[in-house]
Length: 352
Ligand SMILES: Cc1cc2nc3c(=O)[nH]c(=O)nc-3n(C[C@H](O)[C@H](O)[C@H](O)COP(=O)(O)O)c2cc1C
Image (cartoon, rainbow, N blue to C red; front, side):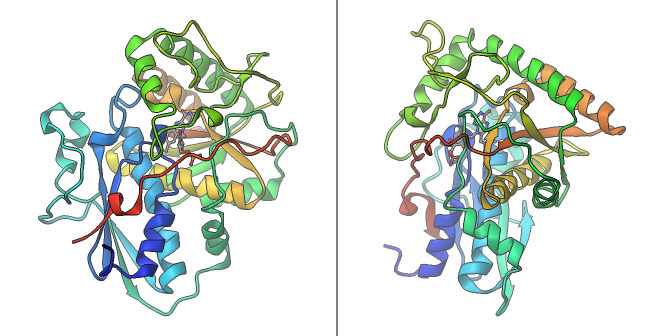
């Protein structure tokens, strides 16, 4: 069925699908076009209560783009160039979940008829730089952790590498200053307690946990609950019929170490770039022997998102928009959680 798509391209797209995505919804589709791969957003597949604007769906696509950009030079030994939202007519591939355009968040309505990115190969042979090779090598090992970390602090070199990996296009990545961490965790805890009272949110969480063999988050990966209340992670054990959290208790690190991904603007292009940075931060952390988690709740709600951005802007002395916050640390010796599944390659890759 893939006869006309070279094996190396299939392998690179398979690498792309290892990326993080909101609730492991994998809202993407890839079209092979001979000298390029188009990445399409499959927005009808993405959860929308947790993502009223489409920010998380586009970040998920950006995360897949990051892997594709690393994998193609590695697998094909070619140089690549990326065009975000390429202009010109394009036909959406078969297999996207049907949507009613008008029902989409306004920012996404114009994005349904174009790929979110085209990755074109522009010549070779090329040997990818060593640091990019390290990121490529981490693709199959990266995962999102919701478990306690050891208290050990990251060293300066690790922070420098994380910042470098997550900085590019319009996005910067910095370690979060302590006063920001305090304010951010408080806002996140507030949103989390608000969300677990929202029946639509709970029903959506329930639909995405143990969803099946190809999508969603297995209950073996939902982590633990911080009895001391320092880690306000998203609780995936809740549901409309459950009374409170079903997570096991955990003893989390005393001081959470957070990286902040931020940009000047807040357009779909910024969201795509932030997703790319998010994945690269996860890969860099993994390559350095660290674990990573994501604390998105306060960013997906407009009121707390404004407050988060204001807090961070005040701490760096210029107005910016926070796009994502990543928790980093060493493992505490606990085993890797259950692996999140992926859709089959023939469901996400077609020849155009
Ligand atoms: C844009 C985006 C937002 C996410 N937000 C959260 C979050 O708030 N809390 C969380 O625990 N995981 C979050 N995740 C992680 C996903 O649940 C995870 O990537 C997905 O289940 C696939 O698992 P893996 O990362 O282990 O491969 C987010 C991922 C993305 C790409």
